[in-house]
Amino acid sequence: MDNKRGKIEISNKYVAVDVGGSHIDVTLVDENFNVLPISSLDINKEYKVNDFWDFLFFAIKEINEIEKLCFALPGVVDPYRLYCIDCPNLDYWKNIDFSSLYEEGRRRGVRIRKILVSNDCNAGAVGVYKILRLQNKNIVYIAIGTGIGGGAILNNKLLIGANFSAMEPGHTKIYKKSYICGCGNWGCIETFASAKALTIYYNSKNNTNYSNLLSIIKNEPQHKVKKLFSRFSDYLSILLNNIIYFFDPDLIFLAGKIVFSSNLFEKQLIRKVIKKINLIKNFDRKRIVLLDDDLSNNTGLNIYNLVGSVFADEFL
Ligand SMILES: [Zn+2]
Image 1 (cartoon, rainbow, N blue to C red):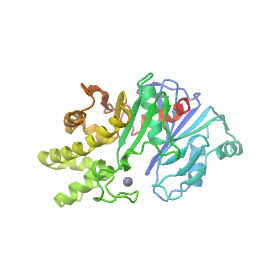
Image 2: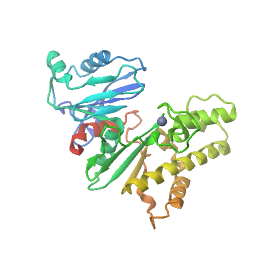
Image 3: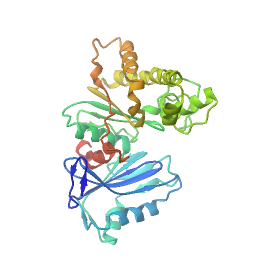
Image 4: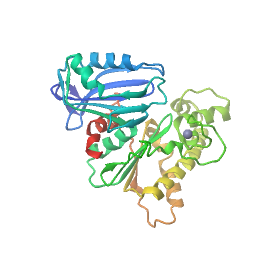
């Protein structure tokens, strides 16, 4: 039971499950934030909840007693009632009561002591906070992928919101009318600055047919890629400026696969952010942190979501 970040014992009973729109990872996590994958599955938007329970309990069949069973979910989550209200990218994941897993576990011979359910970006924020061992810092965490999600820890609490929808930065509007967003609105920032938006924009301007941003970066001429990321940093800097004026956090973390291309945009992004913050003198550029160190050791696991899902209860 070895992984690159250290040893992990099977006797550790924190089970963390990261559910994405197309993939699920089931892992063990220990107190030192080591993560050991135990099972994973590719899914599509028609994946049913009952199939998920079967997959999950099969993955953890060796374990008789679980200290914490923790979930990071891509949607609106009530972490107090352990309720998944809606995962927009999974057609059947609506109004799911995760507290029913206590009974389901008993029925299948697994004793579950505690269940935690988090929005994935809230879990991500907690994961960063724990792994980097931050203390008494106000942080905002932004994950850029298909969309732009976020989480915030302010005064040592996760910002949840009256409708469990605080920190949805991707759907803040920067134009009244422009591109239509998956949420049904026009002009959301994620139609300009998500990895998906960049891919769509590049294809439309260059008559290409790339399925993802990484292939564009790998295959297209450097000057065109540079131009694309210049536009990206223009828009992302608007979002970061808004976040700074809302929360003035100690640290803003940028996560997601796009950050692995940070050499294409980091310097100009920070320059553009600082240029627009007129009211905060001497803004320290180190307050914007790109999480481009690969903590997952190429396992593809989202370490922040997984670790954060286990310790989210410290911030509720
Ligand atoms: Zn939107």
